Amino acid sequence: MLRGLRKASSNWLGKAIMAVVMGVLIVSFGIWGIADIFRGFGQSTLAKVGRTEISTNEFRQIYTDRLQQIGRQFGRPLTMDQARAFGFDRQVLQQTIAEAALDEESRRLGLGQSDAETMRVIFADPNFRGVGGGFDPARFQAIIRQYGFTEARYLADQRRVSLRRQLAGTVTAGLEPSKTLLETLNHFQNEKRSIDYVRLGAAQAGTIDPPSPEALAAYFDEHKAQFRAPEYRKIAFVAITPEDIGKWSQVSDEDAKKLFEQRKDSFGTPEKRQVSQIVFPNMEEAQAARSRIASGTSFDDIAKERNLGGTDVDLGLVAKSGILDPAIADAAFALPSGEISQPVQGRFGVALVKVGTIQPAIEPDYASVAPELKKQIASERARNEAASLRDKMEDERGGGASVVEAAQKLGLTAVTIEAVDRSGQTPNGQRVSNIPSGLDVISQAFNSDVGVDNDAISYRGGYVWYDVLGITPPRDRTLDEVKDQVEARWREDQVSNRLRTRATEMVQKLTQGGKLADEAAAAGVKVETAAGFKREDSPAGVPSGAITAAFGTAKDGYGQTPGTGNSEWIVFRVTDISVPPVDLAASDMKKLKDTLVRGMNDEQVAQYVTKLEKDIGTTINEAAVAQVTGANNN
Image 1 (cartoon, one colour):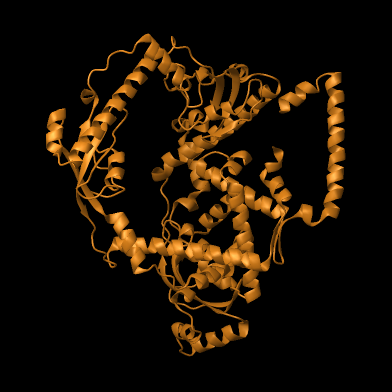
Image 2 (image 1 turned 90 degrees about the vertical axis):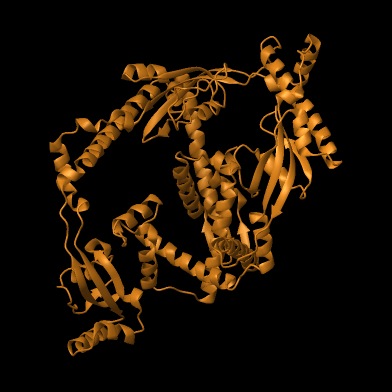
């Protein structure tokens, strides 16, 4: 786009047109700016749930955060169009409104949660545990930053989440699946069946004479769409990734040792201490408690008097960095083992701190971390070099150069694919082999066009540029072009039709009293057995269609089903059906029950939220939703 603007404004006519365009934009900004002041709800508020207003900017932040999270899971960014195609826009909107309804109800009921309880929940979150199993502040900060949170915003968010859980827990308390439901599901999941079966293949179809020219032409006319040539595109791309550029073996020990000294603290194991604390609402109560301890009252007795349990007092074996409150951390790591501090003014109150076991720090060894350090240095250098090449590539592209021209000028290798369809196959039916694993350049190229200046694709920490050089539209092939394929498909259909007919005749004989072994001998095939399989099982060599058909057939009943491909048909008899008794104490039944309870809880909460939204009153500004999600761009 930028390259197009530069080209467009390179002469007097282009400059005049660009001046008019910019003038229109300035006027439109002015109009929309004034309109936004006077339209109130229509522009600044996206939804209203009771007294809670969800602003357009607030939802845009939520929606952008969720899109980025999904993009990280996919390994590439998700476009607005793709998100709407998946229904992601409505899911996020519904979730945001549901959360607002629960928050509104929490306020109405006067629910609350202290800072100390919020911190306790965060400390107990397994996602924030470090190598030693305790809370890791560095990991905590890294994770919340990754998802776009500041510490204050995350604490506020977690407080709201906890209150929502209180409501949800109250609504779902006591929900239990009935014994009848458990027995029915047990029957469905654990029922086992056994079958005897035969495979009818091409040999049982008999001799298939070659088709006459007229028959082949007629078949081709009826199935012409199956042999249609797809759209092909000629594309060129160039990739720049740190992995291709970086070479850790070229990093010197001198450079690695410098980095080691800078990060020395992060490689070793820091000193850890068993820390306990009692938090008081004010300095007077803390000082009184400290005086009683000095007179012989134990630290644990003081905690019991205040109805504090182990998790309320014990911070565990932690490093200094693992204690969020700096004042508490300083006090704890200044005391000798077994000592109790004087009152300490912390972030959440005044505390008495006790230190138990002290685990000394372990100094790191350079030799043990040198390879990893060198890889980090090489990776960092490669990222810098990749960024430099990216800037140069963008400059060349901005100057009007194609991907191939820019790559040649910068000494990079461009890959050109002469013809490829959407599935990644060339006209001869082979897969394209010179596209790196995980690079989705083909679908990107099919969403572009010849002459379009495409944005670079993020790939393995680097970038990929591509051009669509040509488009060959889809077309109907002639019979002469695909005669061999048409004849092969015709033969497959003939075999399949004959096998279906023979299987039908065989099942009729069996239901009239015939024996499967006799019919198998007459057909020149053997009887095979599959025993004790469940609905979801995949016994070796048994087509999935036979498993499905067996569970739709009564005991001692016969059936038929397609096998693998068009040249196989299965005829079977159900020889046994068994359903194990329900043992509610068994581990698999406990898992099934837990799954059912979660489903029932989810359904109950969904109904509760729907009722809340209706009672509280919910209004949605669809125009604002379309603006945020990009629906009004189409």
